[in-house]
Amino acid sequence: MAGLLTAVLIGLRYEVGGDWIPYMVIFDRIAYKDFWGTLAEDDPGYALINWVVIQAGLKIWAVNLICAAIFCWGTIRFAKRQPNPWLAIVVAVPYLIIVIAMGYTRQAVAIGIIFAGLASLDRQTLGRFVVYILFAASFHKSAIIVLPLVALAAARQRFATAGLLMLAGVLLYYLFVDAAIDRMMTNYVEHEMASEGAGVRVSMNLLPAAIYLLYQKRFQQTFQMSDMQVKVWRNLALGSVALLGMLFATTASTAIDRLALYFIPLQLFVWSRLPYIFTEKGRANGQLVIVIIAYSALIQFVWLNYATHAEYWLPYQTFPFGNPY
Image (tube, rainbow, N blue to C red; front, side):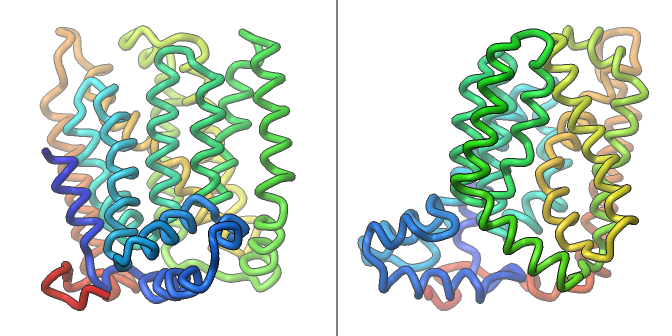
């Protein structure tokens, strides 16, 4: 029920989010395309949803609602794999749900699908993860960055699987991502686009990454994680650290900021489990739970009141009270 309510709040928003107008432009452009022309779009998964909605005679709110449902499905599926699902959702609310899901629709769907894929890793189904990444990349091609991190985690255990994952990654890159990376390099790097607050958002991944790297054995022992699971989260943690280094090495902070979005699962994973690794009774450390809730509330307060672009999210408006278009 909480997921359904969240999907409705995300999907039926009206003129909320910094990219509202660009998404309207995409919707209007696809209205003039046929099915095959739609599949030729940069992000065919997202474009196809637009095309189906247009054919049904509906408007942009239907596109947002479908995307919100996919995002919430993946996020909740991942949260339910954590020892404290509600704490994982609390951590997701300030930035992942309010800022990303209500602002960057394509990347939000990709992250939701990655969440679902990471949840499937509990059952050691690595081959299925490739399918999840392919699906996520159809909404935003930069999601492909997660695939090699998982493939490397499986390298020592299953050489054949790791080889197939790496091969799939190469094929996915050349078939779907190559041109998109060229555009990203042109737009974000060559033009040196800077994203205000990128350092803060990258640091939000860095703190749980540092905690995981420092207490990796405690995480493994407390939750009986497999070696492959330990390595997956280790790689995500190391990737978060690498992004901070890249942020200092280039002035194109927007590109780093966008890639950092795919490391957000580390936040939900670490913060929802942290209270359980510093307790002797097997029950959550209540003080740590309160600290994490307060930390999330602080992020929410600071962003809504001091973020440069918060005005694009405020005030919250919803269909049908706003313009349905």
